[in-house]
Length: 51
Image (tube, rainbow, N blue to C red; front, side, top):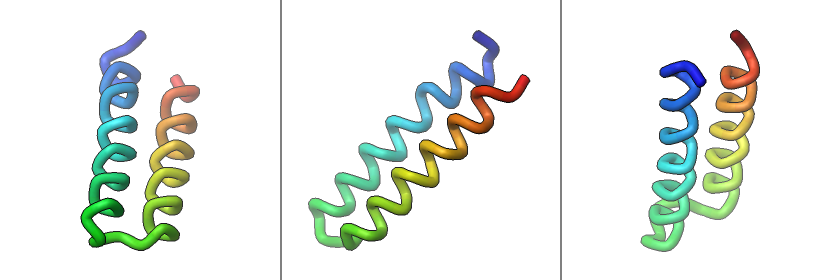
């Protein structure tokens, strides 16, 4: 694993946890959380699979 892939493996779950936390605090709506999780997952998958 490269350094970038390790960083993505760490950053993506942090983004998801942060989005869920903001949802529980009432800051984000459900659609915002879903958008953030899907975007983070798509970007991480795209960058992880690239060389």
